Length: 295
Image (cartoon, rainbow, N blue to C red; front, side, top):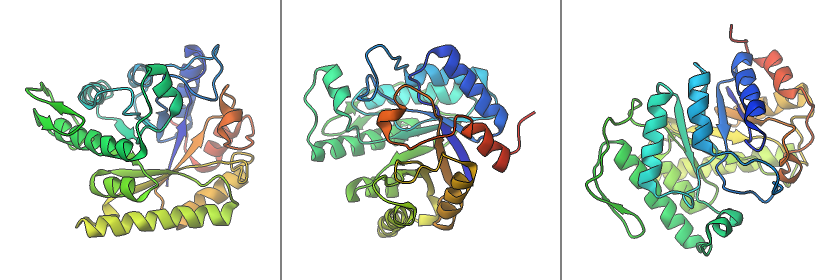
């Protein structure tokens, strides 16, 4: 089981850097950031630092951690720009990037950009085109023609160091799960937050089964898709103790998941995100129970 940490970047840079280096030293596999211009849980006086700027710095400050986004919002960038950013970060990190992408449903980001929210069908259609363009361009294609996004005569040198570039795709509905089934290296989901442990695992496992079905229909072996889950809710506060977190890891491992993601506690947005109560030192205590520290 891979264990990773989402270090939300609504803290000032020195504190975020401290958390980053702590997570690497403790032996975790990856650090993730979210991708928003603003967020409903964050006060106007709180930082919301840029995902790619932070990850570029993280690539220089670390040597072994995988680095990724949970998840990039297509609302914020043309897919070709996103492909360029991903290729750059892939090189800066020495091939440690896991690019996570979702369908862009956060209202505040639309408001910040002064654009009307895309209808749900358009969101998913744009999401599909974004994923297709990313796969094509990071694979060396110099053009793409879609309904919403196009690019011609693109400069794609020097390409990516990881071939193909690993894509983590967030998906919960049937259409987005089909996109994940076709293109994802890793599928990521949020553990259901409105239920207890047994139901949360059962529902996540059911979604994983739907992904299997979609992959099979597309002629892909479902076993080639890794499974990741972001843990924690008010109903199932797995960060409250090491024992509860270890129990959750075991449950999701039995359900076929390959990675569990822990949200680093004590950031300004935490109360509004609903990840549940957390022991202040839970990141270090989980590492002490399940990981070997890096020397």
